[in-house]
Amino acid sequence: MCLSKIKSWNIQKLVAGLLLVIVSQIGYAQGDLLSLVEKNDTIKRERVTNAFKSSRVINGHSIEFLGKGVLDVRILHRFGEVSSGISNLFGLDQASMRFGLDYGISNNLTVGVGRSNVGKELDGFIKFRPVAQTKGPGSFPFSIVLVSGITLGTQPWTDTTRKNYFTSRMDFYNELIIGRKFSDRFSLQLAPIFIHRNLVQLASEENDVYALGIGTRFKLWKRIAFVADYHYIAKGLDKKIYKDPLSVGFDIETGGHVFQLHFSNSTGMNEKAFITNTTGDWGKGEVRFGFNLSRVFTVGRHH
Image 1 (cartoon, rainbow, N blue to C red):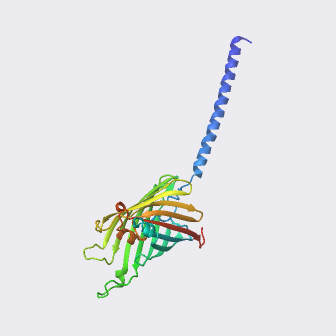
Image 2 (tube, rainbow, N blue to C red; image 1 turned 135 degrees about the vertical axis):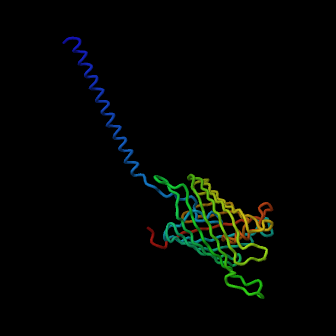
Image 3 (tube, rainbow, N blue to C red; image 1 turned 30 degrees about the horizontal axis):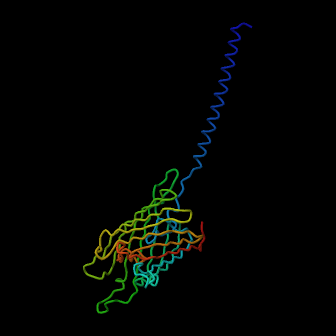
């Protein structure tokens, strides 16, 4: 065999080998692409959950909801002012409380009722989530929640000489909450709120109050998180008398319980009470220790 034929035969083998390598790599790449397409097809849009561990931040509503058929039994306690000193056991000798029942009609609709010994008020609310934060294809970056509530005072009339109407015992609030879970550790929400009081104490006071709520949660450990909520009173109250309610504390998860320990300058434990009746001043140490206890039960059929 001549030298030219040997060279030609070796070149043919080299070309054939290269073609085999290229074809195998193309097939491998096609397999990878197909697996990626199949993987992307399996990725679905999912709702983001656990922005907060409770349907309340501390005082105010959070963007979280109860599941369908879930009953939340809530017991809220506020003690006296810590600055009252040792004679009052730093406020522990006094106590205000609210007992409430919240129920999940659906995953996006919750109703609740409660009774507070502060002002002897009954309260109720309805809470609806038209839009939830999601992740995945076509995701939405935050949750939108609507809350509407009513309170009813049951104390005897302070002035029996005037004509008193049943409607004068009633107050209303409407709230829009916009919130986002930024990470497994951090969540933040904003909540403009409008409160209408049918009856005010003085003619100089306004019936309508406007506020902006801010709530946040920062996870510290597996079952403990720092929480805070603050409501800035924008209009409707005399800021020389009434203060912006601020509460800070910790969420502690214990099985079916969420236990909150907190400090607050407010005494009231419904929206009308803690937004329009807070007079405690953090700067003067007029702060109260308290706790919220939440225990959930599944009482309806859950899907």
